[in-house]
Amino acid sequence: MTVQNNTLQNDTVLEHAGGSGNQYGLQSPRAQQLLQAARDMGPALRMRRDKAKADARVPDETVREMRDAGFFKILQPEQWGGYAMDPQVFYAVGLEVAKHCPSTAWILGVIAVHNWQLAVFDDQAAQDVWADDPSVLISSSYAPVGKVKVVDGGFELSGRWSFSSGCEHCQWVFLGAVVPTPEAPFDMANYRTFLVPISDYEIVHNWDVVGLQGTGSHDIVVDGAFVPEHRTHKSMDGFLCDNPGNAVNDAPLYRMPFMQVFVRAVCTATLGALDGALQAFIEVAKTRQVGPNKMSDDPFARVLAAEVKAEFEEMKLTMIRNFDAMMACCRSGEPIPIDDRIRYRYDSAVVADRCLALSSKMLKAAGSGGIRGDSELLGYHLDILASQAHVANHSTPFAMNMGSVMFGNQNMDYAL
Image (tube, rainbow, N blue to C red):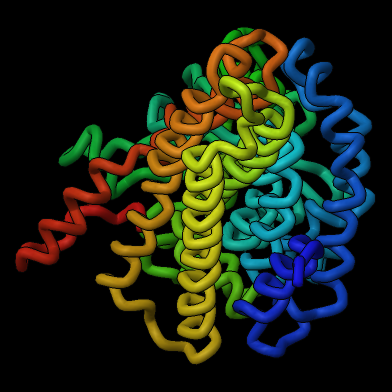
């Protein structure tokens, strides 16, 4: 018997993994509606992909459709009209979007996850951003390059940050900097995220890259902006899962470690791009001749397609499993074991490496047709390649820390 409904099979895995039987999980009716909305967007996302690349910007209509579908609400607190759903739902939607347009999935991930982070700021920060319009969006650039001066009531912030994905669609930005102290002018233990309104920064349009062109990840420049104390978030609060915003947002979702939530935003787009690349490889195999036979009849091509599919499913289920375990701890009020957090962080970071290796194999197997300028397979490959540049996808430091801890040493990483 031939099984043709692969989409149903894959969705069944998503529906029954990580749902925990709650209204916020993958099994819930709302989650299924969101996933169906993402599937329905597929043709439009594919059609607009070239425009996003040419304009270095995801089209406004795409952002509007994602907003109307509720994608930006998935992790947003209910008090602001959000759904406060499990991260598994958010990243399942992101995977579906990414297989059609990785740039769109990338900005969805890194912008919508900010609605989760704002919930762990002091509640006054959320009031500042959403009081008039809870659909307002926030971009980011977390590199600790800002110059900070402590002043009465807060801080004076200056600097230039790169890679603020989707910033043209946003009215606020999260920026990274270290607050100096007399004892430690630059100690990452004093790292904070600073929330700045668009009136206090300039967007410098300089996004010229080989992949993920549609993300529009331009530079942000700030010159002496005042940031009140309540518009900052300490990284150590995020690591300890004890944030000012928990006084208001006390659901288990908002007890998650900050970095565990954020890093999935970038590896999910990469993983979804691999799914898109596999479909492009299959389409090439249907028409490309290898000697007297079609490529789809080549045993090597068949084995490679099976390998990519199996590894894709493994990585996807690993991400779901890890979130299941973390959410179970948050619901029970138990801390997430640090050894598990170290492993989950590595599991996320290594996704880009694995996806690039698999994409490279498919590109090589596709032969000369794969390197033409209009090659879909090449487009996905370059998006995956570009995703590796994000620090969250640089796996070596996380592997080194994990191995060190396995050998009996202390954890040295607090971005977990």
